[in-house]
Image (cartoon, rainbow, N blue to C red; front, side):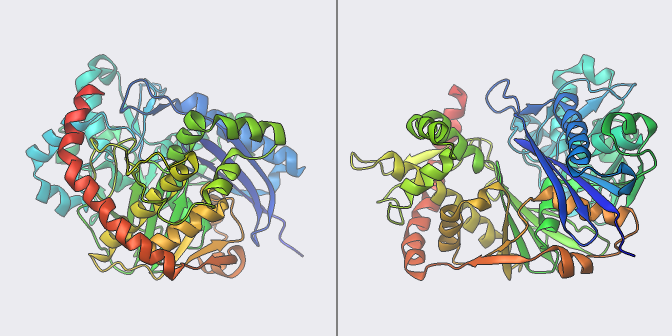
Amino acid sequence: MQDDRLLLGIDVGTSSSKGVLVSLDGQVLAERAAPHGFDIPQPGWAEQDADAVWWRDFCTISRALIQEASIDPARIAGVAASAIAPTMLPLDENYKPLRPSILYGIDTRAEQEIDDLTAELGEDEIFARTGQTLSAQSVGPKALWYRRHQPELFERTRKIVTASTYLVYRLTGRFVVDNYVAPYFTPFFDVRQLAWHKDWVERICPLEWLPETLWSGERAGAITADAAEETGIPAGTPVAAGTADALAEAIAAGATTAGDLMVMYGTTLFLIQTTQVYRPHRDLWASVGIVPGGAILAAGLSTSGALLTWFRDELAHAERQRAEAEGVNAFTLLSETASRIDAGSDGLITLPYFSGERTPINDVHAKGMIFGLSLSHSRAHLYRSLLESIGYGLRHNIEAMAEVGAHPQRLVAIGGGAQDPLWLQICSDVAGLPQDLPRQTIGAAYGDAYLAGMAAGIFDDFAHLQDAWVRIDRCIQPNPGRKAIYDDLYAIYRELYRDNRRNMRLLSRFA
């Protein structure tokens, strides 16, 4: 008799949430998405409401999936959620949010706290204990900013959590974070001991404010009666600890073998390379893997899809109007015109640092730049230059990974941007590396469904993922001729930041 159990995965991303119901052999029975935004109260800040976005989306999507698939909810064998990470969300004594969550590296407010903690604890000691250096990606400095700038709220705080922790709490009543996300609470977590640093944590907040740690696919608990009423998922259904959206994307892409590099084309660009051994790099983010014994080296650009959205909204009104009239995607129209521009955009180079930059420069003061403009350049040149800038950022991070011996053997492209052939081709041409595209492009929610199967005791490892769930649809091959052009322009790209870094910092005073 065929096993008709189903697995439910829901991912809450920066700009949208997605969910899937999947059979045990990887077939998608239903999928649903819900767009949302995030708030920018002032330059350098990025926030999101935990209940109005994260929990609302989860409940709405879970109920919609059950209804769309017309299934008996009792068939759901396991649930897992992933979400943007790391975020900093304080909860009160009743475990209600005290303020909107402070988002990951796109929120750069804690610059002073980064400097202060680095000076107090020592950059070398932080790196030795945590495998990372403090940056806009780190939760610790943001928690310190919160204590300094919102002391009345801080006094009422009883928990500090990230997005996946909050979702699992709402589902099970238990506070957990997975071992992959915990290291991003820098400098709180010892990645070698897989434990919180009590002495460093309590410089900022009590240790009991932080969640306990589990592996991503471990069972965190079961759906409570209250959660069942809100989500439509039967009480008692196993729930995984969950993880960050990026790691769930890597699982969905099948990038779980040493040498696999997942490239997530989303609101930001995020890279996760599975490595055979732990390989920390001062300018990147080293973490443990999905299961014991694994290791990961991660990197991320602050903007990618967000940069293209900015261009569409601010500079592509004609394409937006045409897209609405013809029922097509404005990005498709922009890529069509950009594809007619030669590689290198006729000497136009963009620095994609429109919201500072994460790895490998880790500079909250970095500024966007469009260099080489002339009267012969068009909007199509500008758009192609933006796509190329993301390719340059990808290459920069791949080169940094190689510095510690983490040479990618295979690139796997995933995320919403992976639907754009021009963007993918440009990135392969710039990096000089092919990219595999999985047939299943749903993304993180699909990886969550597999984690749900692990929490339910259905899967013990990733063998079934590789055998039945992930199929490569096609491969993007780099063009050697265009690679030669991009080699020359990439050198200029790198010099532009080095030559203008001081003035970028000075400009920050006027933002």
